[in-house]
Length: 226
Ligand SMILES: [Mg+2]
Image (cartoon, rainbow, N blue to C red; front, side, top):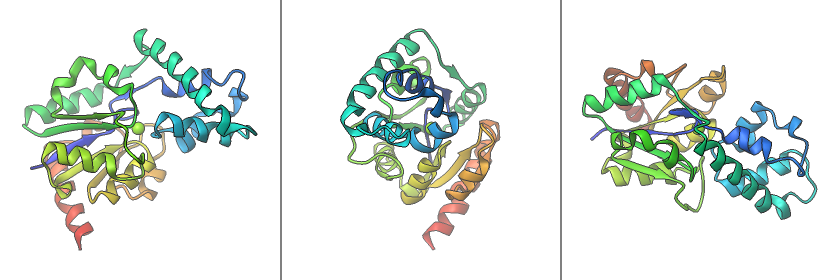
């Protein structure tokens, strides 16, 4: 039984994570060093505590590990305010794809390391048969645990799953789980997704049709099994 497992931030919606991490830096490190490229490379997709350490270490803060918890806490407070204020955007192409696949009977799941994802998906949670958001797993992406858990809860064999991701770490996790991987390059970052091992990279989700889905799952997983 085929299941499509979606990452949330950067795939389904434009969350205010980057904005919150940057705003929370005041008093910790110079926010000017926290560029979008730095965020994508060092922080995106990581559980909050790991992201905080990675950001402060990456920005050269001497006592990064000792202050990471405080930084993560401040980021979360800002994040909750931003979500409550509706400061996030659901990508129209993602919503079209979710409704299209759901109407065709495809099983849909979400897998995000973010504990905030649920709140942002609130308007359309009924489209998903499984939601793995912010669960405490021993390792975050690129470890495949989160995708294997989603497949297990959906009752699908990993070889019958397609993962949709915008971050290289997520593509690597999908491959490690033995799943087909579709990279969504919304920010001119197709090369990094190809390099991470994406089976296909698209600029948005309008190209994710039932036919494309089946071809991806059959083609790539047969190749990966060999
Ligand atoms: Mg993402």
